[in-house]
Amino acid sequence: MKIRPELAICEHCDSVHQRLPLERGEAADCHVCGATLYRRPMLDLDSMLALTVAAMIVFVVANAAPLVTMESGGNTTRGWLLSLVATTWTSGVGTVSAILIGTVFLFPLAQILLYFYVLLACRLRLPAARFVDAMHWLRRLRPWSMVQVFLIGTLVSIIKMSHLASVKPEPGLWAFGVLTILLTALGTFELRELWALHEEAAGT
Image 1: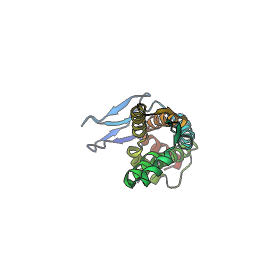
Image 2: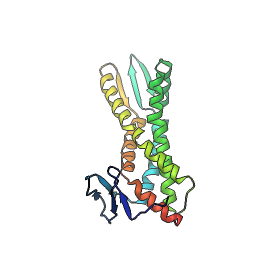
Image 3: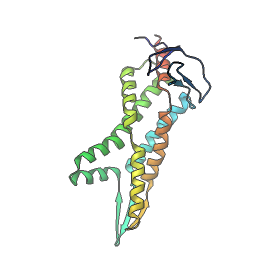
Image 4: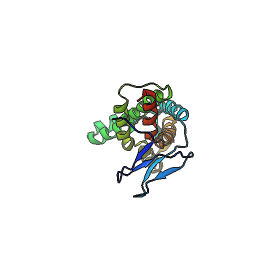
């Protein structure tokens, strides 16, 4: 079905509206139910693509570098995300391990790669194969990327463990903090804008 970039349909009451040009940061509301129809993001396409590439780099650092170093009784222990997942799995709580690897590793990675795919296609003005599937999966994965929850939980654990041992944040933890900011910024981009850009590139 052909997408009509000049029209906006309310997801709550199905009212059809004429799409009007907005300034950056502005939003258009439905005149029937008051829900937000669409908004113009503060970031443009080039900025979004740059943020996505940055997120890729930071994601690698966050998973390759240790998160924390703990010293207790003369023993030093370093913790990585994947080692934390392995420890959780061997501890008999496989469900928690699966949730952790999904929400902190697999889902954010998939989200970053999908963003890169669709943004690059729109930037180059090329019709991309499987673009529709990529956009649907991108929308589904947005709520399941929980890097910020993991970061908060890790910080709380560090504060609690600081009474028992010397705990030092490592580059991996700082990288997760930066990754949280980048994913939050990417999440502000209006996906409808990508639909419209791709339809224009495809010439439909």
